Length: 396
Image (cartoon, rainbow, N blue to C red; front, side, top):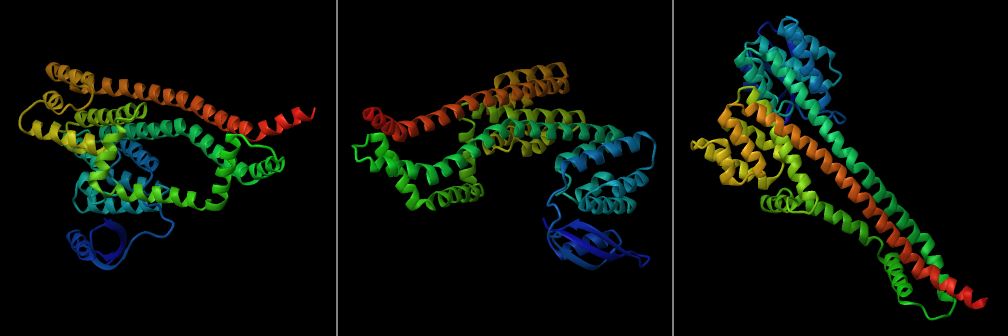
């Protein structure tokens, strides 16, 4: 949904500015009119260098500040204004001032936040709404800050696990391109000038080098084409479903993808259940964190079965969603009335399993890269260096 930066007049004739998401300008006009504002000017879009989304660290800081403000007994309007002035992100500051004006106009916190879906997710808003209903808004903000911090730590762990293999692959690829462009042609030319029969490996290397020198531009075009193909294909629902289904069946990676989705789901579900969200609503909100069409389809089926009257564990068994351990544990939690604790323990267990999976992936990738690099070096030695070495041996 587009973001509009607007200027409007209030009932006292004062000019106010702000930012609001709306599908079009007439809708923006009506939304401001309901708040007692008359639209004067609106500009669609963000400045060229403004971030497209508010960074998670700003949301974490906001949630932490609001938790402290409410627990300290500071009026929410004063605290929200202070939080808005204190944020370092210009876009987020304007959003918070808009939220402040909406609350002053009589809206609740959750209603004011709902006007900015590009900044506050349905999950964020649902937890705040549950906190308002239970009178524990400070706990809602505290839980949100804790969860957002966990999400950021999870992203950092995944990036850290993948950084080393990616760097090695890039460096090796660059080294191979340089070697194939400058070093190998000179060595091959020298071997050809020896005037001796060339072994098969040398002839293969010469053919590969000639192919690369003539058609080098095909390789970057091929990589670009594959990138564009996958980028565009992700917008085709059938392809995306098949691709997500395939990812879960990949050796090593498939288990890691499933564990990552499962960990997110369990952490999300625990927090929403603790906030008092009903199970069928919880399932609708947690859908966004799976990020896998095959799993989302099963979760939709689970939600449908729950709305028909089945328990969560029964619906999961029927849809075969997630491993049997998760389904059995949830069944126990439902029977004992301790589902919140079970979801929390499962989340922590699979969080640890995710860490082990990432370490295991790195431990497999490192030797695999070494084997590939060694294979390339040995191939070059056999194809180029060995004929030269054989000739020098005959000269002696």
